[in-house]
Image (cartoon, rainbow, N blue to C red; front, side, top):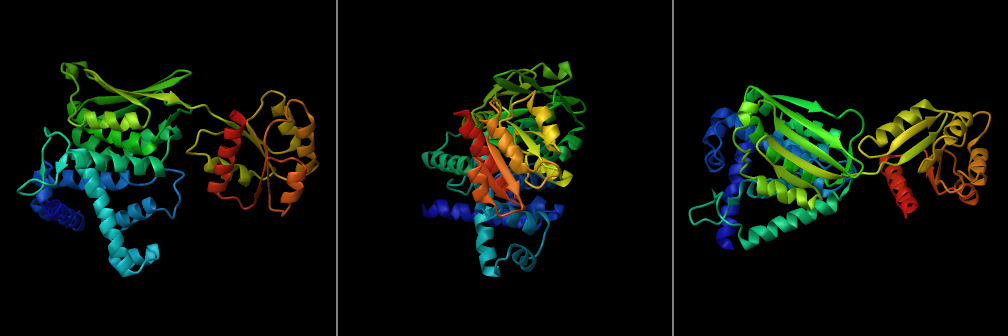
Length: 404
């Protein structure tokens, strides 16, 4: 273990130096990581570290005060934005000593991802090295298992917007695409595309699989498309130039990508043209918003941007009743203070009508009237101003309950 700790310290030190000189190509070229990761240029190392930091950005729903967010912010502010320690500490509300401890934790997170992604062996007799053909050692497999358990705990399987996830991956890989002279074409992403999966694992798998495909498609196009059915969604990434596809798409880390996707309840397929990922479709829940304030509608729409909820909008009771004649939403979010007919009267109508009596209703108002809402059989009460965590958590609870 002492030797393993020593090799790990060497790797952390090289990584720290690389981050400190992230925008200095002369210093990056001298860094030991260039050789051990078999990178061709300082720009490749810079892009790799930027991608890894971005990959550690927690997805929607992770609490802002969580360890995952703290790790990402330390890395991004300290190394990507190159703030000094005093600036980062002030930004995060930490002392210099606390920040230094957080930097060690954050750097170790990057080390762990490098070891998993590149098969980096930190325990070789002459220091850490890259051994692509070596079988994973028992402790590395255990570390992988622990890392995946942590991801699944902080970013559990849920409904995710595949369009937004793919767009964020392509934004991360934009520099790589420019270097390869590749155009990334999206097809079939019109409308909502929701799947049941673990977003962070899917993102990592795509970041593993797409760069080698872009290398094969130099000065050509890569098309990323989706094909939806009732039960599944298939994501395809294909080299458009048929002549470039004479040989199979070989990705050194495709096995790792496949393992990540299995944990995300998805399936990877690799063929001569590229690769495909198959997901289970997510069932969207419809939420009817009844509120006379247009700003409230815009706020709720932002709240559900990264979820599978579909919002329907009514600005008064008459509009709401017209919509309810044609559709049965999973949840109704109801304001109280509205002109003509207020929310309390509307709640009574919803509870009395056979078509709507079983729909969960969330009373959402600035007034402190939770007891009245409970008396009138509202399913939940939210006091304005509402935050995104409470709003989405309430919808999750009610749609889960209504599905049982």
